[in-house]
Every structure is written in structure tokens, then in C-alpha cells.
Length: 450
Image (cartoon, rainbow, N blue to C red; front, side, top):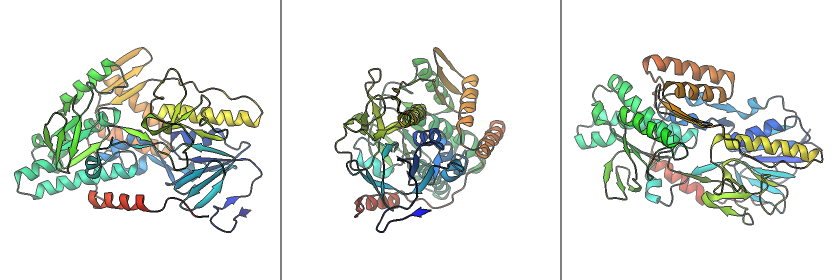
């Protein structure tokens, strides 16, 4: 039976169970929902997309290695058969903890327990000009934007007779030496070395420059020195121009300027240099820490609240071992989602909560075919074994058997011939129009009037 009150209340199935509303279908939200399967709660997942996206492989979509539907999975299919689960496609705009109410662009919803699993967004550190003229890589849409922009610029380069314009159109700048930046640079280098000569014989391979800018003195700052050194070696062997201790200050869409006064010309700039927590309005009484993350206690409860939780990238857990919060990576979100699910089940049984303790399972990063680095427990290694381990771990982590099969076959095919079969420009991408639409969206009213 459907219950739908008058006004703007979101319709939900009638239930006598206490309601847990989860905002965000990332790794944390997914694992929490799975833990509460057919449990003593009505679970409502809210997300502005109707699918979960496997973010660690976004760079392969951006560089034409995979199609987007290979790394996404519909929520409704994922949770088919869950008797206590409800999904609603809606963008959350504001929460009111005192009223225990969530406002969305589709209406409002009341809750007994609220979980913020809203993840993170790109952090440009106040560089507004860079933000206006570059693109991040936090979701499928941005990954496709990068792919379209890259292919469009290469097509333009084949048409122009202006040597300088041709050079700008074929150059790429990647900002940020973390896993996303390193993996993107490696994939782009392989595209240049193996795909460009076949698809664009009019262009000179050596004229396509790939710059990787890192403000710090090493790559992969969260990994070991050995991993950092190997990654640098692999990238330079692929022909990537890695610039350490180089902070970007300006970018106008064609020319980038660094803090030390150097200039680089490129029509494509991908920003992977930082992220910050993302959450809706209404958290004015919460403690907001560095990188816009919400402070929680060791049980993932937002400090100052009893029935409000935060998990994943948006949460900064009170932990003496992680003074700046846990790493904003998938493993942390997965473990927190599972722990919170266990605690909510314990709550229903009248038991005490268990504190969150992060178990670091290691770090991996790949830099093209047969090249990767791994930090697993006390072991530090690179090369083919690390690449094989990276491939297995990521393949097994993708949702859905069909997705695993397609990605595995795609990788196997590419391994033998370096072929990237997804070089399609589905739609024309206009960066300036994209930014205008984002500004317009920000100016629209955020709170639903009830």
C-alpha cells in the first residue's frame, strides 16, 4: 500500500519499522544498505543518480578504455529482493535535524535515523579561473566530458593549419600526483603511443605533450617512497613530463601558469589535485573540519546528535591515529558502511555500538600495461605482479557479473593489442556552456517550501 500525503511529501510504502534514510549511493551507502537487508528498519536510499558508479576506473572511461555502462550498476537491480529497501531518485538540498526531515528537489521526507554518505567533490582550492576552464574527474559525467573534449580537440588538430594551435590542441595537463592523476597520465601516454599513430596519422606523436603537475615533492603521497619512485620512473619511461614541486596558479583554457612563473600551453586540463567533503545545507550545528568534513565520534555519529550519522569521504572520525581524518578512499567508506550497518542492527537488539577501527588493506596504483605499484602490509613492490594484483582486485570489486565479464574481456583484448575501442564522440562537449549551467543551478533556490 502506498502512502502519499498531500503537499510535497515523497511517497513511500507503508511501514511500521523505524526509517533509516541514507543520502548517497557511493561505497559507504551501498555497504550500509546491504548490511541492513531485510532487517528491522525501513531503508530509504536517496541519490541524484539511479546507479552506483565504480569511481576507481573513471580514468579509463575518460581515456577511451572503457564504456561508462561497464562501471555503473542500477540501484534497483542491485537491491532487487530487499523487502525493506526503497530507492528514490532525488537530489537532497537541505536537512533539518531538529525536525528529522530531509528536503529534496522532489519533496520532503521524514526519518528516524539519517546517514550522510554524500561523498566528496572536487576541491580547486579557490582557483576560480582554473575551475572555470578545466574539468574534474569525480563522476561518470565528468569522465565522459574528458573523453569528448580530448577526442574533439584531436579532431580539431587534424583540421587546423596553424602549427601553434595544433600544438595546443594536442597537449594535456593533469594536475595532481595522487592515484587518479598518475593513472590518468599513464593511460593518456599509452593512448598517445599506441592509438594516436593509427587513428591520427596526420598528427606527430612527439608533438602530443602530457604534463603531470604535482605541488609536492613526490607522487602518490599516501604510499611508500618506493612506490613513489617507481611511479615516477614508469611515467617518465612512458614519456610523461612529470613536474614536481610545481603548483598551478592560473589556466585560461589554453595557457597554464605555475607558481614559479613557468607557462605551459594545452587545450585540455584535468584537475585531480584534491577533494573535499560534500553535504547538504542544514548542518550548521555540526563541527566542520579540514577539507569540509563533518566531525563524528568513533561510532560515526555526528557530534552533537544522537540519530544523525556520517560515513565515507564526508566523515572525519574522532581517531587519535588519524588526526586529519581517515584517507578519502573506497576501503575506508566500505568499512565504515559495514560498521554502521552492524551498529544499527545492534541498536535494534538493545546492544552497545562498536567503535570504528580502520584496517588498512594496502594501496595500489597502476601506470599502464604491466606497470603498477603496491604497498601491502610490510611489502613494497612494483611491476607485473603489482599490475596483476591491481587488475584482479579492481575486477572483483565491480558490481555485477556482466560488468566484470565485459571489463575483463576488454582488458584482455587491450593487453594484446593496446586497442581502445571506445573512441566515440557521442555528443559535442562545450566546457563554457557546462560551466554556465552549473552557475545557473547554484543560483536556483535550494530549499523546498513546505
